[in-house]
Length: 110
Image (cartoon, rainbow, N blue to C red; front, side):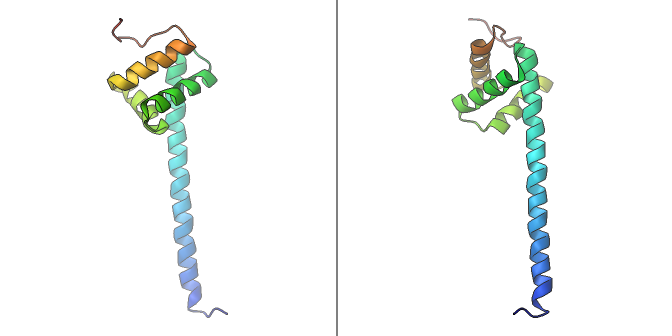
């Protein structure tokens, strides 16, 4: 049996738990938006379907051992600033070659 002094503590714990859940949901929505934007860039760049763009993003993440969200961030930075780590660029080119003939503009040709 709980007394009146237990209720404010329980309510406060519930408020903190709900705030943590809201924060996680906000992060998930933001992460989803970043991934979707990166897929859009890949789709436009490689003239691919959205499903193929998703596969390209996953492959780059897996082959570089970098979290998918971080790869998506790097692709968006590249879209704004024109800079991309060489390893990511190489993996992105390889993945695009598997799904389509386009190379990243400005990439050195071999």
